[in-house]
Amino acid sequence: MLTATRRPIALYDELTDGRTRFLRLEELCRRAAELAPDLLPGAKELAAEAGRAQRDKQGLEAKQGLFLAEILADPDAGTHLCHAMLLPLAVSRNCLSEFEREGQIDLGKIRLHREGKAAVVTMNNPRFLNAEDGTTLEAMETAVDLALLDRATEVCVLRGGPVEHPKHAGRRLFGAGINLTHLYQGKIPFLWYLIRDMGFVNKIYRGLAFPDQDVEAHAVEKLWLAAVEGFAIGGHCQILLAVDYTIAEEDAYLTLPARKEGIIPGAANLRLPRFVGDRLARQAVMAERRIDCASAEGRLICDEIVEKGTMEIEIQKVIQKLTGSGVVSAAGNRRAFRAGEEPLDAFRRYMAVYARAQAECHFSPALIGNLERNWNAASRRG
Image 1 (tube, helix red, strand yellow):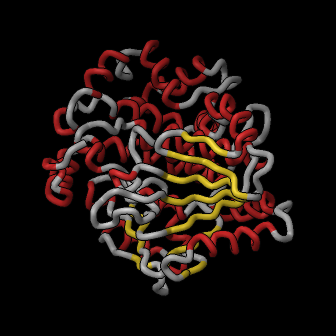
Image 2 (cartoon, rainbow, N blue to C red):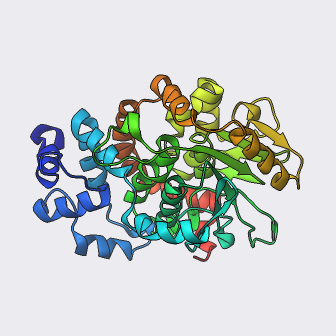
């Protein structure tokens, strides 16, 4: 057993030179597999797995979940890994001068532009209702990095772009969560879940860290505003639990259908009870309860409900409200809330459980059955 040998911790110390340098979890797993091929799948094995549909995978990536769970369960190593995942991406640093000069950058499935004091991150995966998948992950984290690093930005905005689906053609939608078609087709690797929640989602919640500074005290952070049009399903609902202010159109709704899909909804199990209480949180996660944004329950998550078609105006009003008196205390107030609600150590312990449990779910036969039964996944095109 991994817990008996403590090999993951020894490997972590070796690969990080006694925790004096940082490795993101994907690089950590790659290098650890080279040193301990009996513990983790190597590049050739992972390449073969990547070409298989989810139902045909051998589940080799589950070893990554066990490995990372052991590291995250250790207070010192786990905190160090969380710190590593909060550092700006190298690609973000390379793009920063362009964004600061031009005030906009197209990252493919994610677009970022500056409007006055705001950096607006637009999720743009129109064919899949702005769902998240392997084509959006790095772009999203890069956009979050740039929005936080940009010296001309005081507040950040998250919004969904117009989509192509006939039912919603041309309408902006906040997002449909994980791309279930890609999940069924085996295009979502296991590490995707951890990179997402320890990367851009946690950066929204905690800010950007730097190698030589304390994560809890010196991260670069800004206020985040989410604009929900249509719906925020699954992962997009999870994002709302990490932002500071949410505006929603009066007909918008929220759902967390991860149990119906056969997975765990990121850090929602950790964060949602703070918003709506334990019982409603369990109903949303375990029994697929829909939460209408304009309902009493929805208003526990959404700060303002606005008329359909007025989002542009309302976003500007909220930006003015949030920045009108300056934002000098924003970071301090965010840190003060986190100190009581979710210090980094609480997040680390949650992610240790999540890494192991999500690995079990991701490779469970029940996942395939749920996708075929509830999503008609076998008939959808990637």
